[in-house]
Image 1 (cartoon, helix red, strand yellow):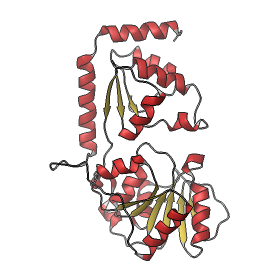
Image 2: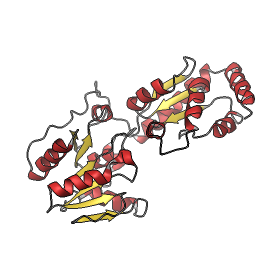
Image 3: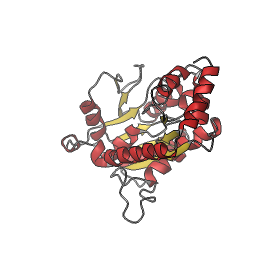
Image 4: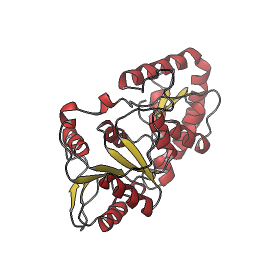
Length: 287
């Protein structure tokens, strides 16, 4: 299953269609922030941590958050398989040829952990003459701010907004991978991100032309963006530190191959006993 399961009924349905059940874990945000999903997700993820044949994670960061919350049994195979970090997969040369415009682009949505509107308020107050474009937030009364509703613009338009931005701000407190950040880096943008071990991991496994600049409070956010806009030196995260011996960053092709390899490994290690144990448990649960 390329996504995470959200209900035990889905797990039961997949189980009765296949000997081997493997799930892709994107993050544990929905369970951690509580308000984003039905609370039944806890029992669902506890079940797959004990009874799945394999769990793939899109980052070590996601794996390190899943395991303490939903202890994984030793019989469950695990592997971190990064999504593409290849700039060619995330950028369009025709879009990238556009000259930068005068806007700063903010990414997010209305969930509290995205912290989009509070961050926008801080930056609007600190840079009253700066134009901001905001993707994903409902409109609020702030000067020189233009809102782009999430899901109502084409992918090409989103890429144009990224490629022509003076800087990109991604204020989320919690992500499992952060594809908008990777896309922004692929276009050579300076991206301000909230301090997290995830961004160290993304930087270490990529060599994209942009730069990531961390902030952890209002002062460092304003200072970081101010230095970018003024063309001053910034402290950026070191990239490619995990790409030793000529190893290239993962792309979509290598991601698919690694995922298929993981499936083959799980197939090789699985027998009818695992399926039978899962069947007995689901039957006992009346599923």
